[in-house]
Structure formats: C-alpha cells, structure tokens
Image (cartoon, rainbow, N blue to C red):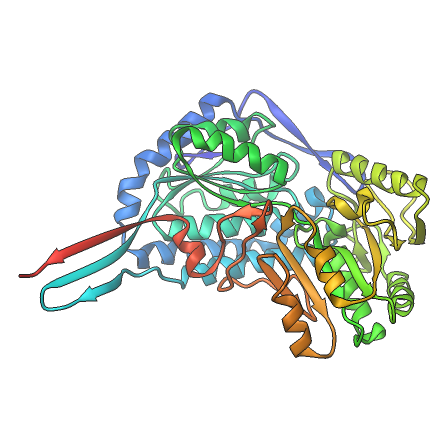
Length: 464
C-alpha cells in the first residue's frame, strides 16, 4: 500500500483470484483501522500545501501520472486482465481510457466566476477544495474508474485515500508503487482491504467526501454512514437500463450494437442494456440477428486475442447470475439462445438471450450484472416508454431507429441521466454522467463533475 509516500505492508493479507481459472495469483495487504487512520492523517497534513499549490502545477503532476501509466501500460494491462478476467483487447482499452481521462481532466479548469461587477458592487463565485476525499472503486473497471475519482479530486486541490475493490486491487496497487515519489507525501494514498475497510472509510470523521461506485444497496449504506458528519457524497450506483428499438430500425444494422450494449464486459457494466424493448413488427428479426451475431463471439481465456468475452469477475457474482438463469428456466421462460463456454475451471456463464419473459419476472425487474438479457415485445411507443420507466433505477438508456427526430422525442421521455441514440456506452471526460432515482446522487465529469469535489464560496465586495 502507499501511505504518506511510503510503501506499507500488513500482517494480514487478502488473496486475489484469477476468475478465468480460479487460481490465487497474489496476496495483497489487508489494511487495519490504524492503517486507515494513518492514511487519513497523512492526507489531512498534506492538504493545506496541496490545496494552495497553483492549479497548473497540480495539472502538470496529473499529466506526469498519465505518462507513468502509459510507460507501464503493458504490465498494468496484464495485471488488470488477470485479476479482472476481461479479454486482452478490453483490458488494453480500459488502460487507454484511464490514461486519456487523466490527461483530459488535467486540462479542465474550474475558474472563479464574476456574478456582478458594477460601480458599487462586485460578486465573485469561487470553488474551493473540500479537503480529504475517500474514493471507493469497484471491480468491473478498476483502473478507469479510479481515474474518474483521482483526477478531478487532485486537480481541484483535494488530497486522497483510494480503496480499490478487494477483488481487483493489483493494477491499482502497482500504479501506487510506480507513482510513489511523484506527488508530495500524503497527497495520494492507496490502501487495500476487505469488507470492513469501506464502512470504516464512510464513517471516518477525517474524510470530507466519499466518491463511491457500486450497487444501489451498498450506496444507501454509504450515504447513511456518511451522514454522521455530513460528508459530501457522489454515488454512481446500479441501473436496469432499457433499450427501445423503434419499428423503423433495421434488424441487421442494430444487432451488433445491441449485442455490445448488452454484453460488454460480460454484462458487468452499470450502463449495459439490461432490458431490450423491441417493436413486435421487427421483434422476430431482431432476435434472429442478435443470435446470429452472438454465435460469432468467443467466450473464453482472456489472454487469447480471439476472445470477445471473459468470465464473470468473482464467485459471488457468478453464483448470483447462475441462480437467476436457473430461476428464469424454472419459471418456464423460453431460452432463445445459450452460448458455449470453456470446459473446466473459471467463472464462465454462457451468453443467454431470453425470449419475451413476463414483465414481472426477476430477470426484467432486477439488474443481473451478467451475460443474460430479456428481449421484450411492445405494440406502441408510449407503452415501451412507460415500461422502460417503470423501475426504481434511472442510470442510462438507449433508443434505436432511423427516424432521429422520433428517436430524440423518445429519448427525451426516458427518466435516466444519460440516453444514447443508435449507440451505447459512449463516455467522455467533458460529458456529465450521473443517475436519476436510485441510480445515484451527483454527477461525474465535465464542469459539474469538477464542482462536485469543491465547495462554492461567494465573495461580495462593496466598492462604494
């Protein structure tokens, strides 16, 4: 671990398992409460000098961080692939995204604003850092989602305590080793630990903000715990995202896009399409084309360049998805397609497409977070919008069709933070991203994302 610019080992360790073969590939530190206290104390001590440092200097160090990651991206990519289970090409893409994010955020600015400047009065809106930020990163995109938190927090003058998931700590801890001497001591602390470490962080009096990405259930616990000292929170939580395929869509043309909107990262993406509402006029053709495309995707060893989808990341998620698939089968739903998986060990689940199950089934109502999706028929667009919005979630959604004006109208009626038209999962550092309803609180990226790591301060000057 990295605490106050020093490497720290612990007496207790946590095993890290390669999900493609279920073998233990490393042991990592299991931080104690005292280790967390040391990290928070170091960050608090470093905060005054770091927050007073010019933004340009902080940005320059973020650029150097990106350079270090890029210089070591092959090693980091291999660690990411082995701990996460995502195929080599997807692991490379995540690493490139992380590098791009550091550089893009480093180029952003949150300058003060002049709200009034008259002969008698001047009013200035300033953005000041919060203090010490606790960043809790999930296992599905450990390097990229760490960058989403580290870059804006440091740029805006905060210091950090970062906790990667105990399932995928290796790439983040290795990055900590690589940047040990880049930042002043205590500015960036990266610690690892088990199930207790997250709650210790959310309740810690020395942290001023928690930036958390994970499930809605855990997000509610984070918010409750953080309320004890009114920590600021940014919560990017679960989703049961709907895709609406309009009657004028070309089944052949949309099949590939719908497949990856649904099954990217083996269905382990918060903004994966979890429910596909397809107009009855083209339903059978879309189902046929999606199955045809699914047959071209290899599921297997992440290190094989031909592999398109890997295993689920961990045993707990694997068991949950297996249970959901079995319940779906037991309930009498028609499995339209069930793909092939490798023989032997590994948390592999076949790509599974379900033909028009009941709207009240678990598969439709819950977020599976795995490679199974229901295709659902609808008769008119108002019905599709109503069914898409009938959920406690509101993270993202998508609309597919040729009539862009109609698609835009439908997109504007979806109760989600992001809607894509004829594409999916397009993220940029300048585009605000956040959820409605129980999919989260706050926004990441862009000016609003930077502002989330600050307090506003209004300064009013009477001139005469």
